[in-house]
Length: 380
Image (cartoon, rainbow, N blue to C red):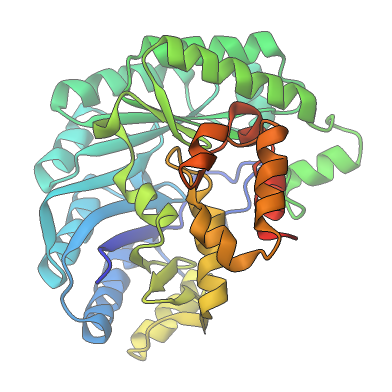
């Protein structure tokens, strides 16, 4: 049986960032649904999930959003206790919450530590005020270093999230952000290329000419520079957008996603995947609350994956990892697999030595062209 993992989506934000298309809501967008209702709703959903799934011990738990740390610390602690009571949490489980650096302090983090949280992922994005303004991030850049230092002192593993390729961001500004992140001596760094999602404010600003389109070539240069600098600092890449100081610092929860393990997502808009079936919750909190009031699991859709879909999804996810993808999966999906593999090795997009040993492992250039490599491996 697959390992089991829990995700809790907290859909609240102080402001909506212009680039974000996640399922999040500000207070003015949630008239009729107070944040104070969230834990009571979550309790009902967790109890319904236990009735459906049975008591399966959670190997990791991750609170994301939105901004989970907009909730009072005692409410996050209560949410974790609900999961522990209904499912059980493994003794060495990784328990993470995302954190906005302006919404926590030492007292807040102490409550989380005592409750059983042991990993914090801080939304840094950039150290440069002009870039943060472009992204409409409102936190004080100095608060990131302050809270990482507090978290480390309290015994948390720490991670910071960066975004590169914001409209107008120069290479020098990106390098400054990376250097500031490294100076914090965090255990883990995630770095994501900015993607302009169609329905966002940023997309409208770019379409109107108010802001420039991100430069894809410059984004690639930023990725390559980042990878080199992190390697010098003792980090290793273990997934396309994630680097850690050794295996102990990797995100076990996210690895479970990429390895296709079972997880149950709680909260409005959360996604789940259990035993080849996946579904998502209704997005709006008021609809979510109404279904729970009727004692219904608040899902809106679902599908059972075919054996081919399971293997295609496995290829898509495992190719992202440093260990790469077993070529046995490719052979089962692509009748011209030998030619595809040979061409990718010749193009230096996958490692030749690993291919001889039966695995497709992306080179640095291959990481920049991962979608192309996947299509090639699948014969698409």
